[in-house]
Image (cartoon, rainbow, N blue to C red):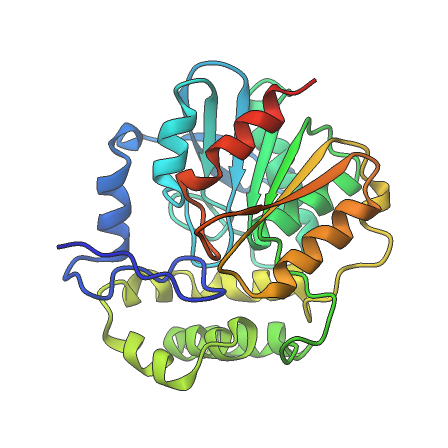
Length: 295
């Protein structure tokens, strides 16, 4: 029997009780994405793979750490009943390319390339660090329409120890040394705040190879989120309507962050989603539909 196991603040640490890989399970849950991807050319020449399914207004989904275009598969499938849902592999993951050097500007350019490839008019749903990336893109003037930000992990209080600002360099160094497993565990420990016992449990999990395949991108996540401090003045630069969602079972600081950002936005609102933690599930569908359908 397959079982999803969602750990607080982790974004894609699933199915410890199955003997299948993380990627295999994801592909089984969204058969509509078995076709080959299309590609958008980012400004630096990197090819970004994306998938487009459904009919109607366009929603682009931007995901977080240890996530790929299959993340949120059940939610994406439901959204295709009324929308064209565009999912993509962020640079360095899956079918997308990468570049020798990284900056968050490149990821903003990637999202811009996807937007242009699908017609230039789209709402955007961001999850976890992907939500942070979406808000940063909007603040830079990328012409996105409405924004749905799910569990943006900036921390406005000292509810837990903050990651060290040297984490990005440390993660890069481990990957350069050919130690992806060590990079995964450093990220789990210092960025996610995962207990040592859970980290040890996950070393032999069936999805461990999938996680290690994304080790190079963990320094990218650290570059985006730094020490989890909300960048001063970021939200006030955003004019689009924005809905911030957080899970009832998530740490309380997630709700505090959503409320603060919503209060700084010109057109912001926030809402708690009952019954979920740090995850991207169909539970948020009514909130999305109500927000997108409102004038």
